[in-house]
Image 1 (tube, rainbow, N blue to C red):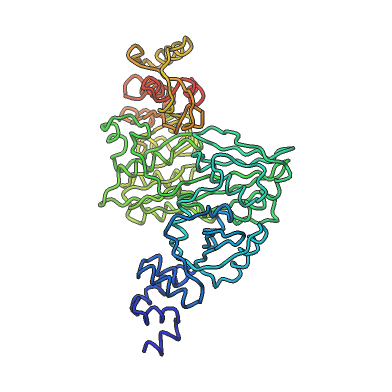
Image 2 (cartoon, rainbow, N blue to C red):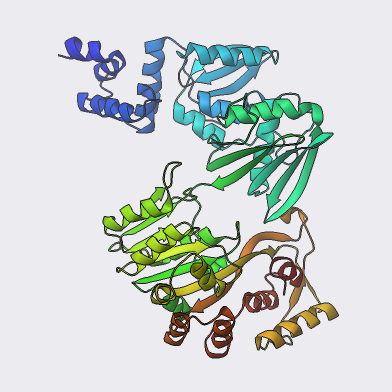
Length: 545
């Protein structure tokens, strides 16, 4: 049976059965997995699923295709990204592992892919190397590349002649420096590279204008954009371990500007309190634990709204609850949450109508930006669901005005909205270098002004205020990471009646400040300054007042 069936249908599978490494049922499992992952070869699936001894697996593959095997378990004697860019190593499943004179030993997961082998050979010939081909395991290549950093991650060499290495180094340096975005900006006589780190754009280097076209060509190539199109495009890069990179290009008078958004995968969701939410469990319970309600988080673009909602989901998630999110895009995968990504041909409101029929307890709607989405979200919140969403307003109370302007009736706003949260991100002082300093006259006047306008007393005498200094850990900025400053409006029955009676946001604000726990953003900001977390300068820049 083995000779008549297996050898005809799958010779490599037959070899594994013959050697006693796999059973027929296991071969069927591999073939089934391959049908769902067409880019993977038979041996790669066996390797990934860890179905037999790694050494015997490699020996069998090498015997079948007659290529010398190499097991890459030890630390390499060379840095592979000195010879090939990281994205090529990952996409082509190839790894340079040893250099003898001008002969570079290169391991492939699939040496039978003659087109890719030839392409790698030509790349190395252009660098003055001859190539010696080996076969290794796919997982060995991935483990090796995980432990290797790109060349010179501490700075970008503007004289680097290999554009693949240059672009790879820009991205790896951004990752090394915790950047959220990379801006590659053609200017009149140069190309400027800037990173956004902790919300601030910092110029990293400037490249000669002559490099512009080849850098743009390389970016388009690795992000699957059309080379010949110079108008706006969107793409993505998925060859950097633990990062998904969204790429956007836009034509301007000096060429095409690129912005790369670095989204880290598998990030552990911080608790609400770690994000900066008031450390008050009673407030958290009152804000989020209600059915037939809607909770809105308000902030500008890039203000951390989605991160806060993810933390709320983590807080609310239990095995007996069905949580569904509708996002564009899904920025972070959360185990146990049913996450839906909005495509080009779909809209929040149409997907939300379908989701309501999926028996959800909690629905996260990525953003309310139009009347249709607002109405469906309101309807969902009035039929037994807790709806969490975001909206662009300047503060928590103005969310009521925004819903009204979208065409939502006062009755529906009153009946649905239970909590409105506004937030801003400010930079955290670097704990390694921050330094205590005496309050300046301007700082005292600022705090006094906030105290007078909000009716809040601050304990200045028993507090320490710090200043930003700068050290290598924080890139000499004095700040490391960011924290959110919050204001929380929980609607009581009187506030709901005020909304139903079409009272203005001014009247609502006055009542909330005098009769509830509501305090404006700036109050939480001052408290974080007096706790040594941030500075008055950060508050002035991000909140004003």
